[in-house]
Image 1 (tube, rainbow, N blue to C red):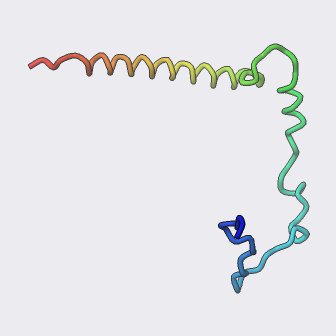
Image 2: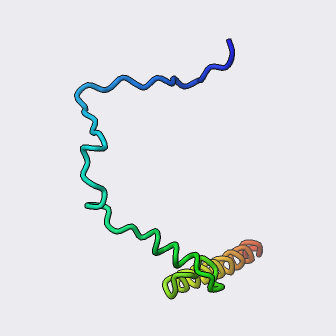
Image 3: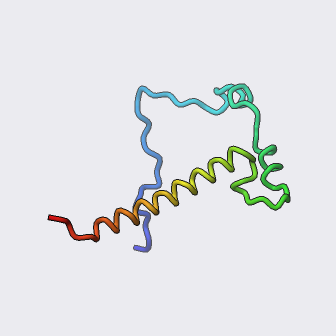
Length: 92
């Protein structure tokens, strides 16, 4: 018998009443996607300036990084305080 695929490799029958559009039916991609920003971002991220990747874009990245670190440290302290309070016997 050999190995047979579990899932059928045949394409499903088309559903009646629906139409499919070809790629040539759509307008040119430049008209609705805007400018390609990838080359500009590659220049920023590949610059050898000694900064880690998560801080390359300046002030917004630093603000996000510091906020994340503050929330992480604050959450850790909160969990430790809650754990300490839960470990103490209740006063009657």
